Image: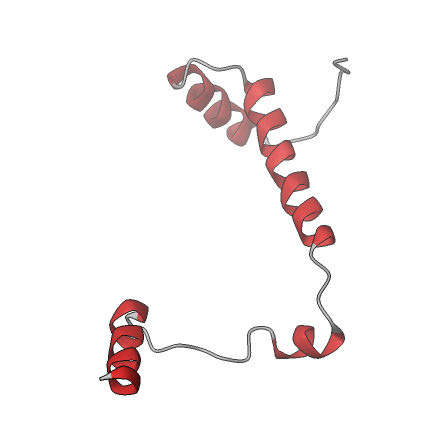
Length: 83
């Protein structure tokens, strides 16, 4: 069931959004609805995955180097271990 929603958005943003929707052959309502769906799906996924407090505290604490290539590093470690 569709329900009408009133939003307050800057006129310039509305104009750009309408032009974008027109270029994509979609309605602005459809674009906004899909965006809101994607936001709520992301939150649903986060709720389903419950992390322990310890794991939450570690999340984001490790930063890999920019030039790190996982597959190369894995291959190297496996060769060292088994060859």
